[in-house]
Image 1 (tube, rainbow, N blue to C red):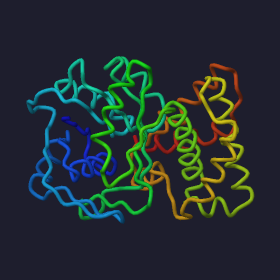
Image 2 (image 1 turned 120 degrees about the vertical axis):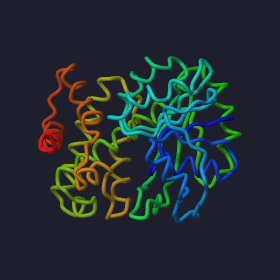
Image 3 (image 1 turned 45 degrees about the horizontal axis):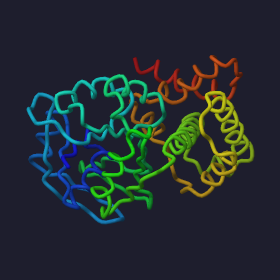
Image 4 (image 1 turned 135 degrees about the vertical axis):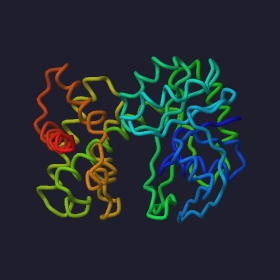
Length: 304
C-alpha cells in the first residue's frame, strides 16, 4: 500500500515516521522549503517510545506521482482547503482519505471533495517540532484511531489493519468511530477553550474549585448542543471527561494555547465557532461557550 501523509509536523511526521520505521511505503507531502530541509537533514523523532532517524520520501504539490492508496490529512483546519487542492493530483477514485483533524466540520468539506472515500479518524498525541527541527513526543499517548463511516467502507478499511499493525504506535480500528470522533471533539473543544481563556495549563485550573466548576459547565453546554445535533455521545460522557481532565499531566497545555503563545492562528472557528453556529440553529443559549470563543476571537483580531 502506498501511503501519502499530508504534512510533516508533530502529528503527520510522527505517525508517518512510525509507519516508515515499520517498513510501509510512506511519502510526505510538504512545502518546498521543508522538502529541502528534510532532504538535507532527514526526519528525526525524539520519543519516549523510541527515536527514529530516516531519510523520508518526499513530494511537493508541483511534483508528479502516481495516485496513492491512502492519504492521511494532518494539517490544521485553516489549511484544509489548500491541502485538498495540493493532494488532488495524487488521488483517484480508489484513494482512501483518512483525516486526523480536530472537530467534525472538516468532514463536510472532505466529503464534497472525495465522496465516500473519506473514512473516520482521530489521534491522541502530544508532539511538536523542537528548536532542532526534530519531532519531540513526550507523553505515553501516541494513538491513532480509524474506522468506517458507512457499511460500504468496511471491507476497504479493514484492509488497513495489516499495514497499521506492528508499528511502534497505537493504530486502533474502531467499530464506533463516529462516537469516538464526537467524544474527542468535546474534549478538545473544552480543553482548548479553558486553557486559552485562563492562559494556563490544566493543573492550576483544576486545583481551583471555580475552575473545576467552569469545566463542568462548559462540558454540559457543549453536550447539550451535540445532543441537539444527534451526536452519538455516551450517557456518561461528562463524568468520563472530568475524570480524564483530572488524570492528565498538570502541565498539559492545549495546542491552541501554544498557538496563542507563539502568536499564531488558531482553530477556534473550526472548533468553538462551529458549535456556536449549531447552538444558534437550535436556539440554545451558550454563555460559557460564547465567553470562550469571544476571548479567542479578540486574540485573532489583534493578529491582523
